Length: 475
View 1 (cartoon, rainbow, N blue to C red):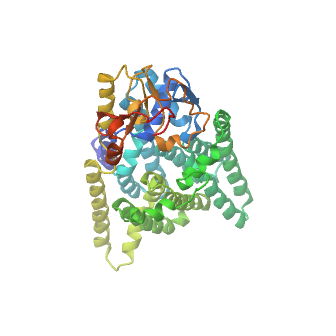
View 2 (view 1 turned 90 degrees about the vertical axis):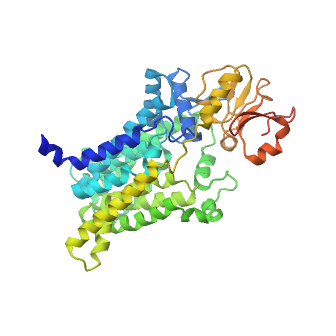
View 3 (view 1 turned 135 degrees about the horizontal axis):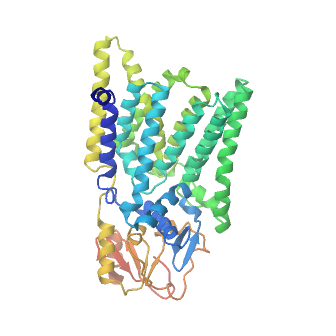
């Protein structure tokens, strides 16, 4: 027994660290915010029997495509809410299961393509990564999508053995795409692998890659048709994801051009280091990977990096690329140090020292609550509304507040102004009841000064704003 524990001690330590960071302050860190709150609102609506819908004013919008996520994310959350009632902590429990499942799959994936020592180093680099844990705990699609993507890649490694692995790979890639639409980047990555197989004249492999791609699309399309049937307007939403703009002025890379200092922040500088080391490591072991898996991995890393650069500058858009690089970082570091004429007795301790330093820095960053908000402001607003505004009719235009409130017939929900601009006009329908109600908004200091004569303070930076005249609504 003791020998068994000693043998698996590194994995046990990694598991303990993972459990600590996963369940530490589960309901409050990261604090609920706009995106994960919208997803929790839909899951809660489903759990409480009102359907897979986003409540918009007095009418629910069923199967809202603007969320860009799907049933593999919403259904487990709805199930836990149905069984145990709603709270942010309860809604996040399925996410912690995805988080731990992803780490487990990551370990076995890395071990399969490298070795146990590299798998342990890479996995502890992942577990201490704040961006991974803090995007995995909230109800977001990034980590569940990574879970299915990684299972698909594991199956892809075995694609030459039996046809069943081809079927499994297509199914898991389809689930990744169904979980979050940005994982549709797997399709062009498979396209590159298809071209490589075509160039090598590997006709059997070509058929298998084609089948994987077809299965991915076939698993996803029925859900997309359901969403399209609910409301038109999908094209403008794709343009928004690509260029942070509406249909008329979509401009890829516009955020990067207007905020070039984004790339000088520490997390992005760190990613540059991981990109270099991971790229070297991937190149170094390319012969150990079947060309289908190798080309798919490399293309995914490139595409997710480009997607981040073209979008809003959020690190969670870069997370899949960072995630896919980590198995190769220790190998890349070893290869880099091998260029120096150091003896093995010096090189190995130096590799361990550098990796340990990165792990300690990442762990401290996460322990210090960096990279995500732990503000209780939205929760405080919800308490204030329940205490003093229960009979006050209003439109609540902040999802992070609305999700923490019980049902009240006087309170109506509308997405925040930026998201509302993207909603179909047929969805945002004001009635005589809601047209001129005060709106709960989170205001900047300048907005507070500008609207001082028509706002009521609720708590923190949240105010009830009286609409200016009978020509409502304007905010």
